[in-house]
Image (cartoon, rainbow, N blue to C red; front, side, top):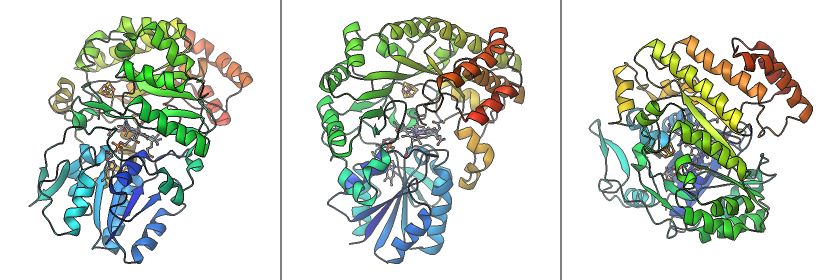
Length: 499
Ligand code: B12
Ligand code: SF4
């Protein structure tokens, strides 16, 4: 039987995390096919390692996971190189990037198949078809080209997460010792990355999860999450958790049950949720969550402007007022809200675009005044193809186009797009981008992020002192002195912990 190589392209500058995407794919073929894992985060020269495996002649499949941004820098040239060196290898990509940009990926000529969304059933079925020369055309969750035309097969309902095979941590450990993945973060010295649910029940018009999951969500039970966490704690020493779910907090019942199980485990945990959802939680659940170790939660606040929140399809219930009062509620429970804002959404005129930016800058300052512990993360709106949404309609009407070839995606300009810093959207001028980034620098000077574990109290006080006049007088223009301090002390902007 031919072997499979599963590749996780380099995604993080320093902190490698348990590669849950590739590990889930591994789980789907465990016991059925022989496979190896190569992690670009932990190899000095991953291509050399891949080539050495392929030179054995035992391999037939290259499975690569890929999100937009840094992972493309290895995924693209490596896949191209493999096609040139080993034309008989079948290359299969999965993950958010190929699922959302299938045309650019498949017309590259060096990717044969895309797994569209969950690969748990599709991947083993595809390998089985290819190994046995059977048709693959009816396998769900697959994208391929037929006579130059894109074919997307039907999407399966989301799978019961408790019925899927457990992640093969021990097998991963045989390639890369798991403790290497348990990094030091603000949460703990050995942080576990865990993913407990698929999808999200909402349809925010700027979000890459929507085209793939179409407002569907399914979660693993609290008991099974706890079982895995306990295993990682007892076997490998994990002492903190980053939940990588798009929306960990959809079910209050599940969160409360999990919190109950975690009591006394002495593990700090963090996850991503929605303000309107968690605002409905009872005080008892919030207190229980905190007592069980939930120290910080990431929320997509997006904007304080109710009209734009509506355009973003934020579920209809989140409002600017709610964002403010919720920050105060979180303070009562000693849970730090990490609010992410998306500035620079489509506007009809440059004046309107600038007005929206100024509104949000002012709003962020109000939130900080209400709960100074709120961490603020500022993204610039980078379109995703949420077909049919009002916002994406506006994006297309503005003349914005995604790159057509894979190589374009790794040009420096598009890299910034992926990192949501400078998105090349026609309605934003360089002045507007500078205004956003300059404000971010001043804000981060006046309120240095608590998640930067390298910054001591003295440095924090000094940075705050230097930034104070700018912050208080709203004079953000070219804050070179703060940028110099940032460089000198290597402190960073708030961002999703470690992302
Ligand atoms: C962990 C994570 C990271 C990690 C690295 C992950 C890694 N692989 O090593 C880090 C922290 C580095 C990271 C970085 C970024 N990330 Co990220 N990341 C995630 C996150 C939270 C979890 C990924 C995960 O483990 N999922 C769990 C697995 C089980 O799910 P899955 O990946 O979907 O895999 C299933 C299928 O997709 C498929 N599949 C996936 N891969 C493969 C491969 C093969 C061969 C097959 C057959 C199938 C298959 O099968 C799997 C099982 O069903 C996702 C959101 C999410 N919840 O998925 C965002 C997400 C993928 N990231 C995203 C982004 C944009 C980024 C950044 C580029 C930008 C940013 N500022 O956040 C940065 C890069 C910044 C930098 N400086 O490096 C976006 C992508 C959006 C988009 N436009 O497509 C997401 C969706 C978050 C979001 N909601 O916006 N990220
Ligand atoms: S709630 Fe979050 S994950 Fe869900 S659709 Fe909205 S932005 Fe995306």
